[in-house]
Length: 181
Ligand code: NI
Image (cartoon, rainbow, N blue to C red; front, side, top):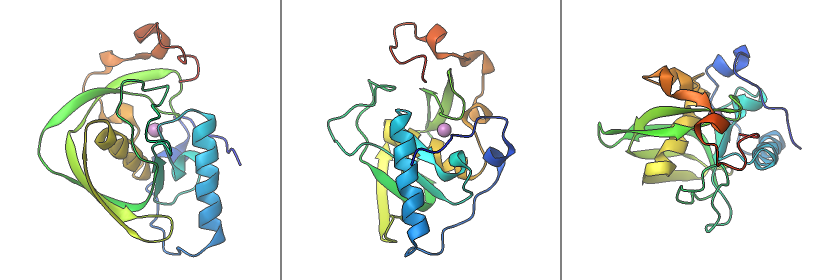
């Protein structure tokens, strides 16, 4: 079921979400299914449970088709479809890189955001099985963006220079999906 996505200004996006403790529940599986329906309908690169008003530490990102490229991020390497619960991020160096980000909760805008270039992330999948990956580049960026949602942080709050925040169709006039962000 496609759920409404909360937009910046809603205080529910600023809460710290709670860890998932019950992995067998139908409610958790229904939440994850709704998150995928909602992300796909919006052509998103990822989605966090708080964005649909559920204060749990659940994020999803990536694509089931390894060859697929997100139309909103056509230059990015594909990221495997992932359900990540109770995530922990560990940067593997101090190195930060700046890259353009959008957010389904901040529609129509893009901003230049510094993120760790390389990191390890751990957590659990939808069945409670461990996930442990070392990633870099766009994959690392997506994970940092989504996990920030679990701590009430939206990408503009990570920006160092707000002159690099703008409307997608003004910044990138050729981007065909600019109206949807
Ligand atoms: Ni977002």
